[in-house]
Image (tube, rainbow, N blue to C red; front, top):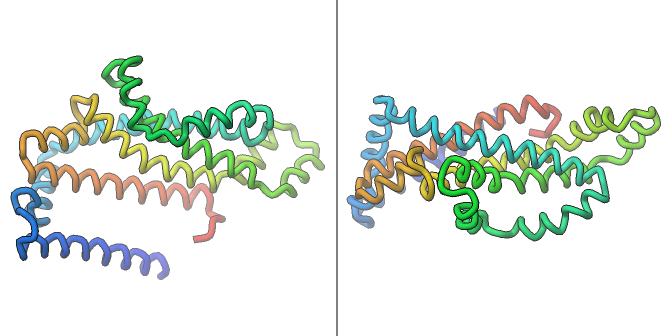
Length: 251
């Protein structure tokens, strides 16, 4: 019942936004050429989905997201565990992380173009950089926030370091790690769109920019709706996996 109530509130907010969008068109507060009514945009989005035109661009964007996100998660969790467990490693990397973390990731795109050129490698790197730091920071904080009693118990039973890491530290830090991965998933989708707009020849981001350049506003909003739907599906899928990975987390 609690989940149903939250879903009802969320649906009400979404419905209110759509009604407001329609109202803006009805009372002519916006130029319908530049801001088509939601009914028109939804019909165009459905036509794209029903025709199958969505599959190739969506598949390309999802592949790019999966590649960059997987690299970022693996590196972020691995380095985060090392920094959280070792003071020497933390002291070595912490200044570098704090130096690079505040830099807006789109500002790194021009140097990446110089070193990697324009292509798939650059786009995957852009996504990976955008996703890396939230996973890293949350992993470090998750390890540092572990109850010392757990570690003392592992030492009492003389658990090897590897077993302590896998069976004690990692499960205890997992809620924080998943929180960082959730943030990174949203950032990853943003970086995918940015990468496709700047260096892509396909994908949802490229199509949105291409429709804007050709002044096909209805199609542009249709692809924006498809992108929003993609973000919603990814968020719901992550929530499902999160609830299975850490069932003890308070709902």
